[in-house]
Amino acid sequence: MLMTQSVLEARTKLRHIMAHKAKTKWKRQEYRKDDTCRYCKKEMHLDTNKKNGSLATVDHIIPTSKDGLDDQGNWILACEACNSKKADLIIEDTNGYDHL
Ligand SMILES: [Zn+2]
Image 1 (cartoon, rainbow, N blue to C red):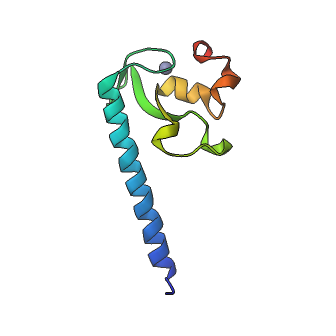
Image 2: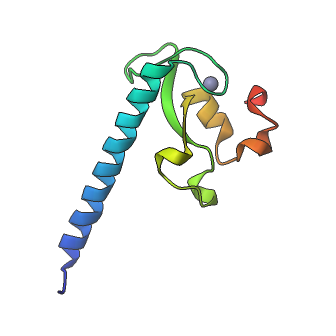
Image 3: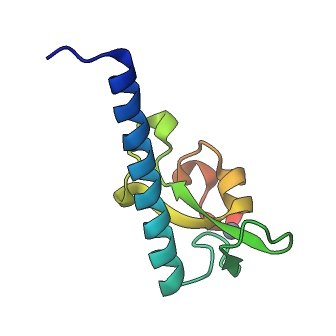
């Protein structure tokens, strides 16, 4: 069956939406278990409108830019600051969590 470009684009968009939903659900579940950053241990929040404190984000243990998968086996809950500092490094490259 020949698919038109718009059907393929719609499927890709739907796949992205489903992946985003799965990641958001995982983040909330992990946050409920422990609301501290897995790297720096600071308390985080989930409110994107909040100006103060550390926003909880999903970091990729092995960055996707280094062939890490975008699935929960490769996700870790990290504050925005640590996630940003870690960037596309693999944790061994940072000499451990304390240096983030
Ligand atoms: Zn942190």
